[in-house]
Length: 567
Image 1: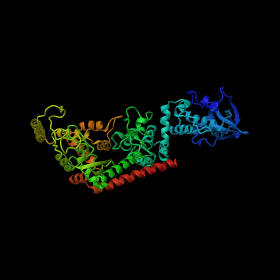
Image 2: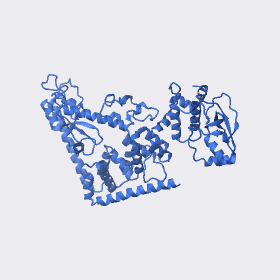
Image 3: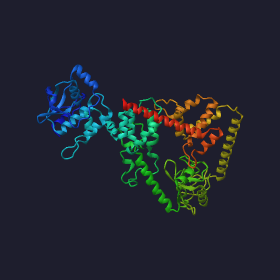
Image 4: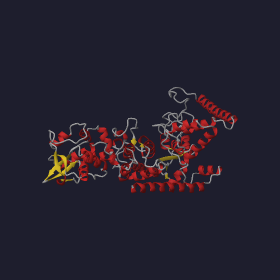
C-alpha cells in the first residue's frame, strides 16, 4: 500500500484519523457549494446538538477533503459539513489531500471509529470494512492486530468489537434501539447462531416483558438464559470431539473456531475450554451421531424408539429413573468396583441394545436390565463380588471374571476370603437399613412443623440436579441474585429465612417445577395435575388468566413501540 497507509499504522492515542503527509496540512476555507458528500459516508441524522454548537461557536475542527476534478469530496466530517449548511455558512475550514479511493476509505473509517463515544456497532462495522479492504492482487491491507495498532486499541478490544458483526439485522436493531447493552450484545454475538437470533430475541422480550419501560435487558439474567439454552459443554458431548467426519463441513470440534478454547480473546479465563458457541452445528452433530448410533443398533438386531417411547422411559429427566427396567450401556455399572461401563463389562455377551433419546436430544444405547444381569450371571458374575476372573475362565468375555474379592481397592493378587467378603457386605446392608429406619422414626417423633425434615430435603434438592427448577424458582419468586452468584446460593439463603410451612411449600414448588414443563400425553405433567387436584387449584381458570396476562403484555409492548415511532 502507499505511504499513507504505512504512516497510518503508527500507534496513536488521538481521536483524529492519520494523514498521508508527514507535515501538518494547512487549513483552508473551502466554499460549501464546491463540496460533495461521499457516497460511502453514513446518513448524518440527529445533528441538532452539533448545529447548535456550530451556530454558537462555528466549526471548531476542520473537515477532510480530497480533490475530485474541479470539486472536492468529503473524506470525513460530513456531520460538520451538514451542520454548517444548516446554519447558513458559506465556507468551512478543511484540509485538502490527494488520496486514492482506498486511502480515502481507510481514513474515513478510522475517523468514524475513533471519534468520541461512537456506538459499538458502528465501531464493529468500521473495523469490518477495514478488514475487508484489499489491494490490487486481492491481499488484505489489514489483520486484526495491525488494525488495533491503526486505531490505537488493544487487539482484544478489536476482536470483541468485530464479534458484534455476528449480530443479525433484528439483533442489531435491538442493539441500536437500546434493548441490548454492549455486554449483552457481545454475549448474543458470541453464543447464538444467526439463524436462531430472531427466535432468541422474541424469547428475551417475553422473559423481560415486565422490566422497566425503555430499559435494556438485564445483562446478568440474559447471560444466564443464554448459558442455559445456547452454550453447550462439549466435554459432555456423546460423540468424539476429534471426529472430523461426523459432519464433514463442520470438521472436528477440537480445532473449531467456535469452541471457546480456540477463542481466548473472546472468553474470560474462567470459561470452560470445551464450550460450543454454535448451537445449530452442535445439534447437527448430535443428529448425525444419533443416526450413526441408530444404524449400529439396528445392525445388532436392536430397536430405535420414537420420541414418545423415549419420553415414556426418561420421564422428562436426562437420566434414567432409579427404578427403570433399562440401564445405559455406556454408563458405569456402579456394582462393579472398577466402575466399568455395562458395554465393557458385558463384552460379547452384551444383549441387543435399544436406542432412546433423552429430552435434550442426546441418544443413548439402552439395555434391558434383566437381560444384562442374566448375561452376567451366565458368565459367572455375581454383584457384590469383585468382577475380575482368571483369564482361563470358560465362557467369560474380555475383562470379565467370576473371581471374588473383598473390599474395593484390595490388591487382586492377595488371597481373598469370599465368605468374609459376603459377611461384610451383609453387615453393611443391614446397617444402612437400620440407620434409615432410625432416621424415619426420629422424623416421625418430631412435631409436624419441625423444619429438620424440610431442611434435609431442600439441601438434597438444591444440590442434586435440580438446577433448571432452582433457576426458575429464583426468578418466579423475584429473588435478587448478587453479581456472579449461582441460583443455588440465592435460593439457599432464601430458604434459611423461611419457617417450617414456608420451607415445605418451597420444596413442593421445586419438586413440581422439575418436571412441570415435560408433559407427553396430557397438557400438563402428571405431577402438576395431581397436585392441582389435591389443592383444589382450577387449572382452566389459571390458564385463561395466563393468556390474558400475555395478551396484556403484548398490547403494552405494542403501545410502547407505537409511542416510540410517533416520537
